[in-house]
Length: 523
Image 1: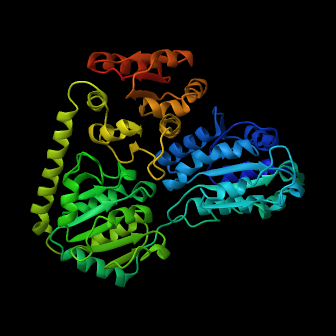
Image 2 (image 1 turned 45 degrees about the vertical axis):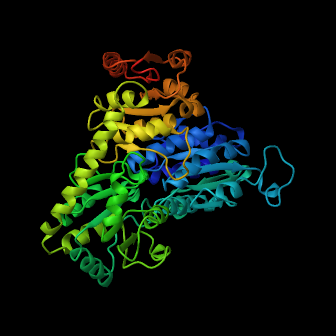
Image 3 (image 1 turned 180 degrees about the vertical axis):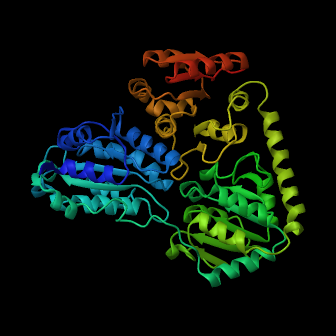
């Protein structure tokens, strides 16, 4: 027999389903959950300085680990602040579990004047894949499990749950038998396997691919969400096809892979518009509907045959007619196509080599532009020091423009940016979340000055929680060394390669967060 509050039910259900991190700011109405996290073995609580940054930390953690973290925000203001961070996860289909208390059930809908009360669930509905309100104590476990199922299914995304404060504080004595009825066994509430496309559609796609002379594969962010990078690389090699990435999928293919030809719509990669214009077949793997719309808008359907894929069958054909459509997860589709291709791929070797050569020429031109001083020179120097296993978050126009080219991915799922909402300011908290997921690796936050200022206060969280990210700042000059020291972490002014090497060595020795001011590099 044990006495459980609504907060205990939330914590126990999430722990049973594999959630380890709870990230949030304290509030009186959500104290039962904070208390429950403290009582539950294996759960860890992190307290950011801002609810939006907390959601961004959970976002980074999910990107790097494939696991869900819980984002806690209190009623009213806290829930509202969290929307900005949750929106980034929504735009990039990142799974996270957001939870907030609400005022008492008898004050909620329609709203009665109440301290902090507002229609917060309605606000979060626009930036979540699924949301609910738990009006009954005993229904909490199944709603939590339903939320996780929605977060981790199909194209994935954030979910939100409101719990009225009286339900949060409600408690009951529970026997073991009743607990088993309340909370089904772990993993029993959602499908976690993969599924293949149906045979006829697969045959149609294979016929198109085997007849192609100039195919191009476009890989999207679901390749990262579904850990499908090995299957994709194997398919591209067998097909002898170049692979272009959407901006949201920076590390779906390693930069040294001979099939990689760059990032769609990158201003420095003039090779890609010509390549897309010459392609006779376009295969979109792991691309969300938003990414597919971007790709299809650049094609002439009368010249290029299109193969669409999606993990959500109802999205196939949503953008108009295509030549073949496959429902399934990215890894399964890639594997099925790889096994089904039986023709001679050597006819496409010349096409692949020409596309790769055009990309390398565009990349070399960008390196020439980066010589001397400024953000390009700083990022180029940083790129020469990073290791294949290092992880990096890019935040801001200079960070993305130069970082995606000159700090290329040496390993799968090692480069991250928030692309769906086209916002800035997420770099530091997202990198902190990545570091939580990959504590043994070096994690860089490459940020423009204006981007870092959005959540600069999280330098204090990095210090307080011992999260050893390396923050590299480029762009507009600012007194960043003094800012870092004001938050209690080490700051270094880096104007040349020797200073960069020394700063990185000291950062590794300390194991704590550091900031490298590279805004005056080369001057």
